[in-house]
Image (cartoon, rainbow, N blue to C red; front, side, top):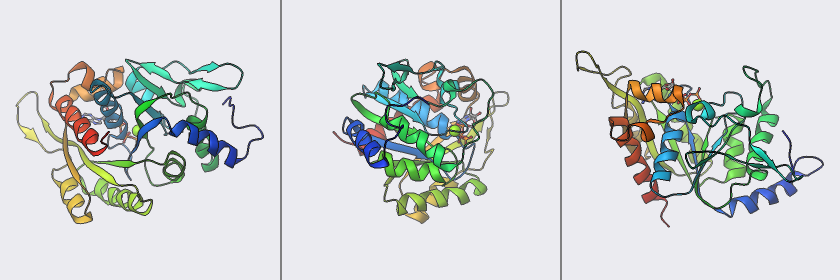
Amino acid sequence: MNSKSAPGMSMEEQDQFIQEVLKRIRYRMVVFSGKGGVGKTTVAVNLAYALLKADMRTGLLDADITGPNVPKMTGAESPPELMGHGGTMIPGEKNGLKIISMAPMLPENSPVIWRGPLRSGAIRQFLADVAWGELDFLLADLPPGTGDEVLTAAQSMKPHVALVVTTPQEVSLVDCRRAVNMAKKLEIPVIAVVENMSGFSCPHCHQDIDVFGTGGGEKMAREMDVQFWGRIPMELDVRRGSDSGQPIVLSAPESGSGTAFTALAGHVITHCPA
Ligand SMILES: Nc1ncnc2c1ncn2[C@@H]1O[C@H](COP(=O)(O)OP(=O)(O)OP(=O)(O)O)[C@@H](O)[C@H]1O
Ligand SMILES: [Mg+2]
């Protein structure tokens, strides 16, 4: 990556750049879970657009360096433009949402075979070298697990709050407990445990099917003394929207999941008051 802050610059100097950037962002939030594939990116993307619809200036930082999915799910697939000679990146913009991700900077299908320090370095550059401007919210979509990226995001982005995504399934909840404990250790308040893919209404027989069970996220949140927010149903249009870069909160805001994402944004705004 081209950079104004990397060559020959100490971590302390880069931290100063990051501090300058952070001063202009009112609330910073990490979206994470201990487990892969539970819907972190889907939730982060739809929540970001729901915040934008509530007139919040919002940015989305794709902190999943090796598996970046935000561009595919938003349709923001152009690489960032560089400003002047300093290497400052102008974030991509799609439907008003500012987005930065590794994906558009890579040749198609090429893997990012980077060890932890390099991945962490990329996240720091996404803060230090990106012209985010004035924002009300910056959301970071984290990779699965509780590894380097989560730690780097916590240390460099200094998030005010965390949102933890899980499915109701026990195997997801086991990992989710680890994520909640990590947030506690890092002293990031968890303002919402979101139970995603919770219930599916069969479009043919109209029966409700609990593909991954139901209620597990709420029980886990109660046991761990963190706030449960609610459920987002599994819907075909959520998956279709993710694949076509048309988040459901924009394409079908009145759907079950669209309504849920709008309500989640309201919850987040209430917890991050002006
Ligand atoms: N509520 C939902 N209804 C239907 N499909 C969903 C829903 N939430 C997520 N999906 C689908 O589930 C898959 C996984 O979602 P997503 O990529 O958001 O998970 P993730 O936790 O970010 O995964 P990773 O750990 O790989 O980053 C995607 O195909 C997505 O479209
Ligand atoms: Mg993801």
